[in-house]
Image 1 (spheres, one colour):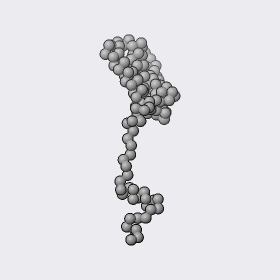
Image 2: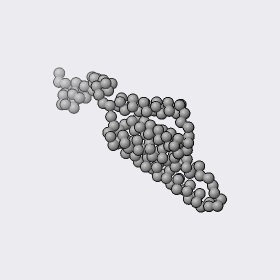
Image 3: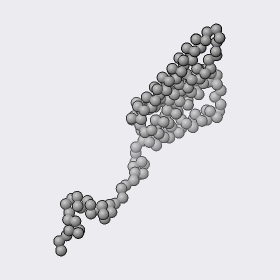
Image 4: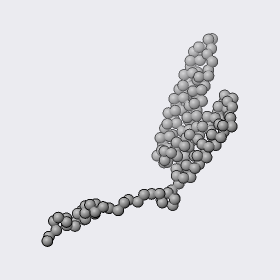
Length: 158
């Protein structure tokens, strides 16, 4: 199971990705005003700057969360947060419709993340799947005996 700080960093990474998507959507949906073209250009530049900052922050959180959890846990948590926040923000900010298909997909992502989180917890079931090394071959045994000071078979006294 990943530690708590890695979990929150992975969720924050997904949230930053969603905010970057919202910033990109806002920059593209600005209407051009012929009366004040500089306002339009400055607003678009501000949204692009926000997009870059959210992407950089999301990447930093993602990489940092990898230090305390597996990549599959971090990626799935980030995806879950990104999808959920993007969908809700699209509905609230841009009046996008959340279809039943979208809701079913979001639920599947959340359930998948929960399955991954539960299966990555160390326990007796994972220890059974750990492969055991094969027994040493006769050649490996000879090398081990030589290293331990045993006499080489070709050098034995007769």
